Structure formats: C-alpha cells, structure tokens
Length: 60
Image (cartoon, rainbow, N blue to C red):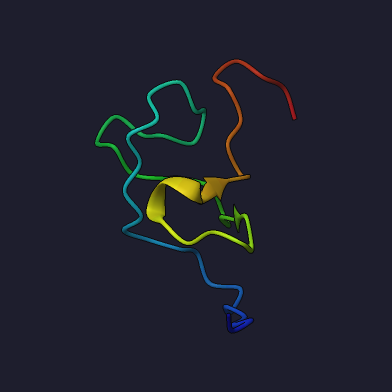
C-alpha cells in the first residue's frame, strides 16, 4: 500500500453517513480538517476504519 501524503489544504467532498460523529454535517459531509483511515491489513471496505471519528458532544 502506498503512503501518499496530502497537502495542508482542507479536504472537501468526503461523504459521511455516521450520524453520531461530531464532524458529520447536516448534508452528510465530513467537516474534519483531516481524516485518517486505519487498518493496514484491510482487504475489504468493511475492514477500514475512520480513526478521526469523535462522538457528538465530546470535547477536544
């Protein structure tokens, strides 16, 4: 798997269906300044995990 690095620009257009994540907007987009998807041994989509997830109402 490649280790591509992204620029410091804001990520746009990432959809999110996780309604209890604080970064999910009313139009089902991710508003986080970065996203991190984990599980370097994933072989299917269901084995990947968004480690940026934070429950609504949690404090930074």
